[in-house]
Length: 112
Image 1 (cartoon, one colour):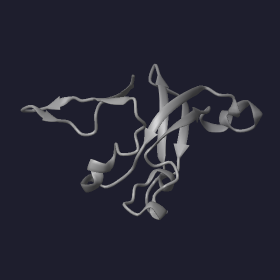
Image 2 (cartoon, rainbow, N blue to C red):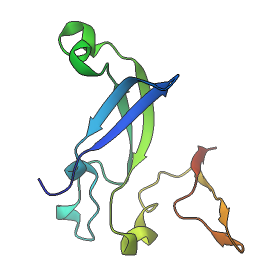
Image 3 (cartoon, rainbow, N blue to C red):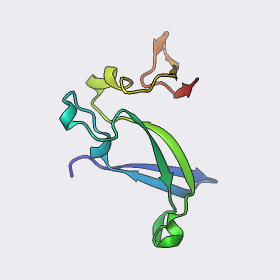
Image 4 (cartoon, rainbow, N blue to C red):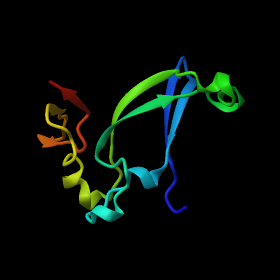
């Protein structure tokens, strides 16, 4: 493995409550379609599970939370392509940084 997996944590009162592990190969961007990860540039349902030993066995697979996420992992020079796969109906909520420059990526995506 050359790129570490992506971990998404749900934190409450400074405690890790639930998590999801996403293999980086599944969200890796490439300009060649055959080399792109299967979930790159797609909105995907991610289910969070309990961390540690509590997360194993039948009890650990109860859904702690469900997230709808747009996943994309690529190089900084490829960032112009990161919203290409976004389904119609979504809009960027852009933040400004400094002297009127747009921050990339947007702080959130909103579905209308």
